[in-house]
Image (cartoon, rainbow, N blue to C red; front, top):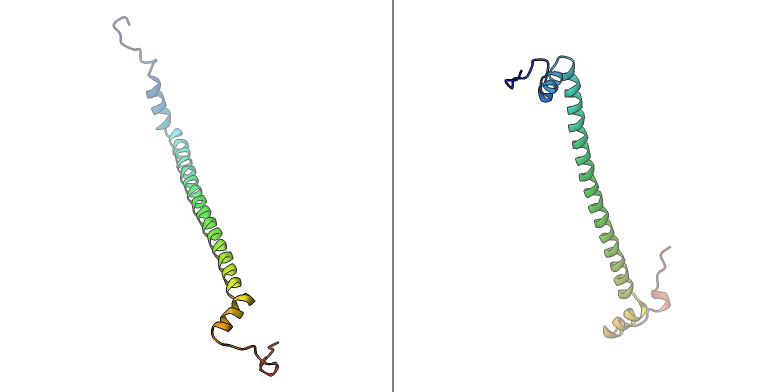
Amino acid sequence: MASGKKSPDKTPVGKKIKEIIFSSQGFPIFLSFTTLAILFVLFRMKNVEMDYKISKSNRDIEKVLLDNKELKAKNARMLSTDKLRRLAVAHHLDQPKQDQIIVIP
């Protein structure tokens, strides 16, 4: 033993792990844990991807809501009574008479 050779009962740890993993009992367990780990990573990546899509959709919704508010404000300015009266004067329009007004219920 002084010659530097290892005795057969003292195998390296790596070799022992390989024997356990690739044995008939250890391989299915190793394969199951490996599959579970890969599935966990894949589902986590899909979750992160969905979070990005949701946050992008929320930003788009906020932008559309802001645009809608701006358009409603512009519509209110365009249909204000002062603006309509100025347009009527500019185009030589008169106030409608009582018999010209039609009320739609």
